[in-house]
Image 1 (spheres, helix red, strand yellow):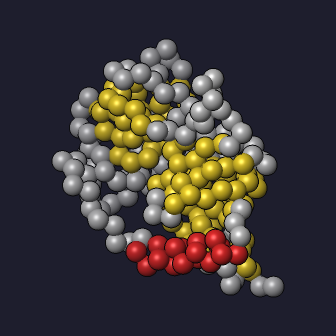
Image 2: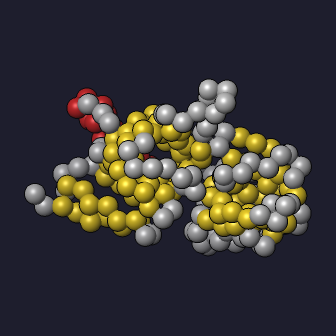
Length: 210
């Protein structure tokens, strides 16, 4: 059987030629089916889906997962997918999709639709348009001096949406890369930071995380 080689950054996937597959950069979130907090609820992690096929999905995320863990993912425009972590990557993971024949056929249709429409997103109506940076990773320095890798979900001249292991309280002053800001709100799997001073962002160019 002939195969096709698909690359995304330091992630390489090999899939059969006949399988519907696509390289994307789509907002998503996931939870680990067997991990719950003290209240019995699953913690939700924000991520980006960067590779999709009817058999597997690749995600960029700072969250730590293990091979064999069951994943419940919700991908923007595609809906819910369930699967098992096949391999762990430096900045994400690859998940085998658990689906029957009918579900795979529906997923193939959605992937084909997304392939046709992925470059026709409606521009967000914001005072400062938000964009996905070329490098979706940065460092966040917390008030106690500790720092950790964070996933930059989107960024604008006035702020950024981040996902990290730590979730600072609203009002916390911190540093994203080299930019000072403070936490203004929480959302499932992350938090929003408003910069103290607006940062230069050139529309149409490759935006870099702080």
